[in-house]
Length: 80
Image 1 (cartoon, one colour):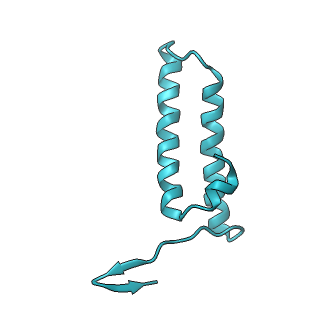
Image 2 (cartoon, rainbow, N blue to C red):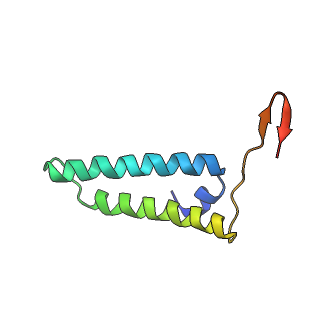
């Protein structure tokens, strides 16, 4: 996923993508350790994906690029 696609997502979706990317990285690392990984470049790509998502989250924290934050409803009222 390229940075433009990540920036178009909501903050919640980006956080979910980060969790999935980190889980994928752990799986690939486990496969590498147990000699089950055939495509060794997958580890490099997984690390880059995690770094890319973390960079975009940091940009959001610093206000460089903002991600959309979904409005939450509590008891039928919008909370912003």
